[in-house]
Length: 255
Length: 267
Image (cartoon, rainbow over all chains, first blue to last red; front, side):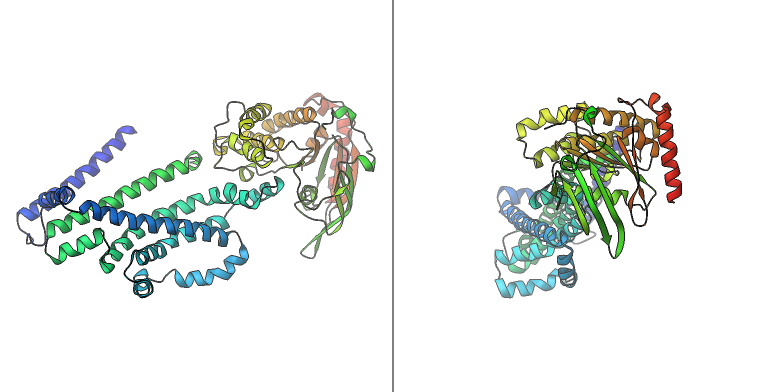
């Protein structure tokens, strides 16, 4: 069992290493002009240079900050709003049509509106990221709250639990799998929107770094930025997965 | 506070002492009469079993006693006071233990839910949880999640959570109905011992007529459509009850015949 896991890990590393090797060969053979495609060696060197002498670290922190604030705002707002809507049938029927109208709206269409209202500011980025990534959380929470086992509400009534206690001890943990799944989806959306906002509004971050590098034909810097963005996506997803399996230990017991 | 023992049970309780009283209780849901009418009294420390054909409103009657439903006619009283809502002195053991337990909380956590709600300080909870788990035969299973337990263990856990409320009344809705025969008999005896030690009043709904006689001081048979009392039997069998001796007792057999005839006639 353990050995097969190690085997799969090994295989996935081999595939990744093979792809990087292929990339190196393609760059060395000049299949694509080096102006557009640097080899992994040059991209790596640029990455190192960016961290030691350039401001790549500041850009990385910028993107992480935009993403984290927007995502946290969306998480708190989405869960709070979702709990309110999901725990009342009346609220669900009042608000559901509006949500259905807003949800499929492409966030890219919201950005000009946000820029007009809030300017090319951090506040605009925060709003756009939060607005775009709130949906999976909001809908997950609404669904999770609506799907709480009715018997548990009766247990709460028999025990005379307060409204707040019912939400915190019964509804939220019961909805946790849906909420956490929403939070994982939102993480990706938040990263994408952070990059888009940085590109459009010239905010300090990897989005701006990538855009400026591309315009100046500094392809090695461009690839360094893209690699970092990939790494952010990968690491945050890993962290989220770890948090999920820790918080949902009880579900593992079920299987 | 606690009634000393079942031996003190009176066969005909006086109204003033009734723990739970149904006074011409009627319930209409969605224009349909579910119960019409039930008058009943349960004495403190008594074990009252309720049987009846399906659709007779046994479970509904229990929910009325729990305060989960409000009667549309008559009144349900707890120690003389009209019931408007569930109260902590009354614990309910649901049949579907799998749905009534919190799957994200361990055995200890599920009992803790009741202790938290009655406001027990955190440092006292652990000792009480250990005590309650031992009481229902789950010592050493504190860290297990409900899904890691058998049906019998889950139902024991639910009973432990109900006992954590320190209830004066235990309302049990076919609590052993979903369990296999061996587990059921074991739990019947455990429940009798537990109830004897706490002195709680029990209203026990079941479709198993023998179980009703085996456990009860009194058995009430309900008639269906709408639910009403059709039969009341006093069970004059010695306690403690014994799975073999009690079930072979001539009085047990007589009551069994009477109940079977009643159910057959009511269908």
